[in-house]
Length: 263
Image (spheres, rainbow, N blue to C red):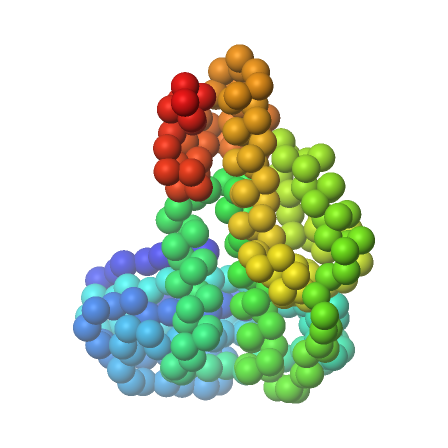
């Protein structure tokens, strides 16, 4: 994920193993000249407009006026993995369409959430959330912008009690480590996309929110039950620093860790 603010000008985009999505953030519309493979587009781009460039296709663009956009690159291998595990689509037949300018409120919302998380830089705590958003982004691309329209398999009823307990035990045992969405999905025995949906359906919150809640509760226990320094507690509970812990602890409880310990 990258964000660019650039003056008038152009650039060549080297073809590679990543699909590219660009969301226009410029406050004023401006004219763009784009070339993707053998296709060309010249026209205005305004805030909220999205373009999609498939992997393995050379591309270039030139902007007339100040340009501001959020750029996300998705490894082709990741999209193939999601296609195979979450939707009824043969990854060998996967082909994204070139899109020069489209308005897609759902896709824009996911991109803006990714942008917000990029600016927060929450380390381990934010990683699970970003992975969840990446899976939602991939499903949206496969469903709306692939040459073959796949069908998303649906699971109903949420996760069973046994799986919820297994997930909870796993998170509790690994609070001091970087927990990835793939780890939790593997414990549940399903794709990352389906796991995220069913977990929220069962628990009412996302896996990221649940993990953060567990970490804050563990911090509360250590603050009251031990004399460990707050910085050490932060690391034991998966936060990358005392200030990182304080930020999330205050958001969850309304007070700082030091005030909680004294109360």
